[in-house]
Length: 104
Image (cartoon, rainbow, N blue to C red):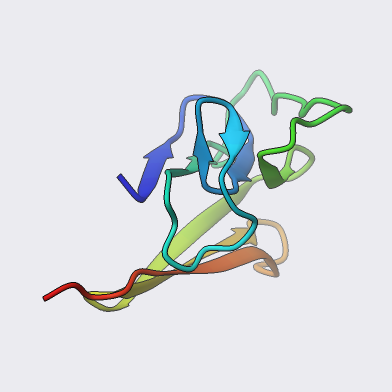
């Protein structure tokens, strides 16, 4: 699995490609393991959860101070772009493009 989305945690975060709690690479081209995206910053009356002040090595970024939303653009059968925006300003906060070589 190249990409996994969840949304239970009330914040936004994503990982580098990770296997058994270890990053396998620090880019998103031909990932050899799964990129995890938690897109849970859409709102919660209890407020947003806080990210750890000491993130693990697989942590690629996150937002725990503002609500937000994401948009996925699928370009073709080998590439997609995920973008995460702050709800209050619609400003782009985070983006990455996942590319996977096409196999015959």
